Image (cartoon, rainbow, N blue to C red; front, side):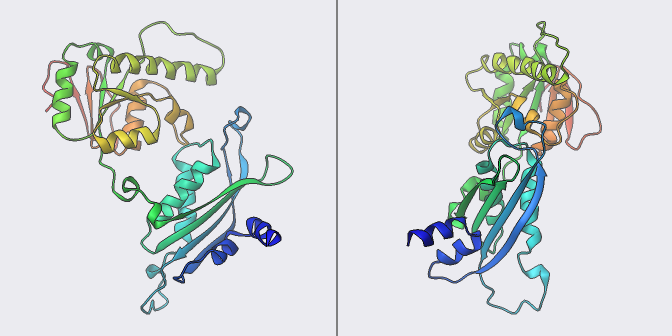
Length: 304
């Protein structure tokens, strides 16, 4: 029995799916040995380094009860699995294979036919053998946040003068009353910051200068919380929590981050990435020709 369990543990996920099937028989969609070169990992030595990662995925799908007439549009295709992998790899740089596996599983399980999914991910370049994780998730594991469409937030970018304006709480009252999720962004602190010769280190210093101001801004109204991760952002949006964006994590982990760290450029990038309903810039100008509606206001102007 032990030898069987050990063998099954290291077998392809399709074998595990067969061994653990329940009372209802499902069809299975298999993707084997899908190889991608990607930057991933929690260690500093894995930064700015592409490594080979292998994906094996088994999706159990509800069997058809009607004739599909050999029509590819009526089935869940292999492309949906490889697309889920590509989309999650492109969304942001991740530290953990576990996080990547969970996100891929969630994206696959949103598909109507998908009932259960096995995701195995292995790093092939971190040692003499493969290092990896495998997870199993079912449709029942999806949360309300994952199955519902996220509400589009309103991004409000404040100049340093606007962030110190005594009307800040009044602006928040007006914004909250509109019932769209509110995320504030701010400029970098005007205080002198260190200058170093390394462009990578300077980028991190400049981002931290914005985060300093984010914490100062949040301290000016007890309703504001500083958020840095997608999980925190999703929670704030779902629960109507007004917040201030600290950009370092999302920018440094992004696969397509802006080249500069000017606060206005980051706000535009962030608004497009979050699919914001619009952007209000108070006391400062934002770049033109972006994919989100932008209104630029003087501090004394009405928000709406």
